[in-house]
Image (cartoon, one colour):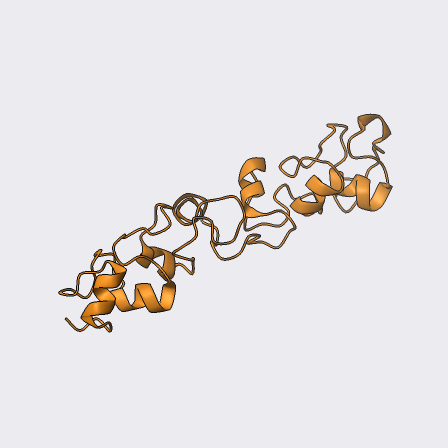
Amino acid sequence: CNNGLDDDEDIIAGCDPTTVDTDLDGLDDFEELDVYGSDCGDADTDNDGLSDYDDVDNGCDATEQDSDGDGLYDFYEIEYFDSYCDDADTDDDGLDDGDEFSYDTSPYDPDTDGDRLEDGPEVHTHLTDPDNFDTDFGGVDDGTEVLDDLTDPNNPSDDVLTCRVATNPEC
């Protein structure tokens, strides 16, 4: 069989020398062994739920369950969370996609709650809720408190309730 390997290489690697694709995952044995480092006898080398072919087709590493190290298996990123398995922070907001899942934020929107603070700084710097535009429920959004009023977005008693033309055209 012409799969790019000689019969001895096939046998040593545990491949079937009579077929091009021993594990029927869509990658020929030569590609699995010499290009991607995956197992020609196992359709899902890394046991992440994606076949080796699907891993490669989506830009993932067929030998790693979590190719980008963000805490989400590649299968989950591709099939359910719709983020990239080769980029730990799809929206570049400072919050890895695995954390985006934990905080119920969007891996495609750097400011999920629309308060002008990106999700990463909300979690790591301001200790605010990236999925709630007014973490302290004081009546002023977190972005206004941090960027304009210089008040604590976690303390409702310091919210400066003023009429702002930029956010309320009725002022």
